Length: 352
Image (cartoon, rainbow, N blue to C red):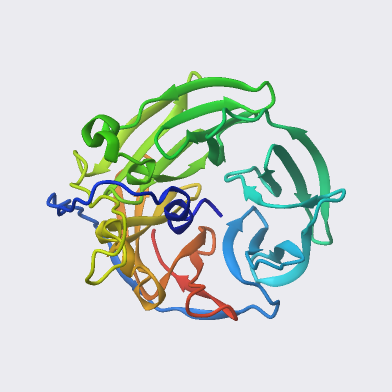
């Protein structure tokens, strides 16, 4: 899965000004279709600490996030959810890995991930995973990370180059090591917040389908839609806030009250985002950051066309923290690791 917000909090939690304020802008969203979906349970007999779920053409892959896991990825046939095998052992030997970060939107049944500076690709089959290749990605400048790799062409990938104080959205060619294009952040939060700025405030999740993409923001009620045009990142539509909220900022210790840190009073908006051939599916929370756990997981999925037009609002009867969508079977598969690791939830929907 992508970097989680809790991970970002852990990385970037520092002592800054004690300041708090409230979010005031209200975003109106009109969905022509609203459906209430009831969960069914998909048993998972393998012992896995759910930390990621990914969909390829014929398979769904679960990631084991337990600290002492032996193997990272478990492959299930789709549809039917029959367990086939696991692959990518943890270790430092040949074809062993330490901290794989999965690449989104790889074609057909190609599965790629970045393991530190190594880019690794497998072909998944019913009987086994076949190692295709690996190559080195040049290290980025000290203090920065490449996050959220998402494929948008044969050799082109969207990514974010970020540190705790700086972030930039880039289109890169991993094979030639070229930065093809980059775009500035939508809101000039660095200037607005000054020394109190941290990239956590404009952290976003990416999904794509071919050359189309969407960004869903964690702490801003906003989704941006766009496409790759002539090797350039072009934002074509925005749904949500036209200006950023007034953020609660980090502080040195306990503020007292409901949450341990002042920043946790910020509203958590989009917690996961998934793209299909037809639509973009965004998991909408609208819950204070500090309350987002357990039974308070997100239970709304907003559905948009790739142009950013609202299609449907799906109301789940179970909260989830991550999901994928099988558009052909019109089924959402999701999990809430805070509640249960013995099964996934499956939600059937109907969008004509």
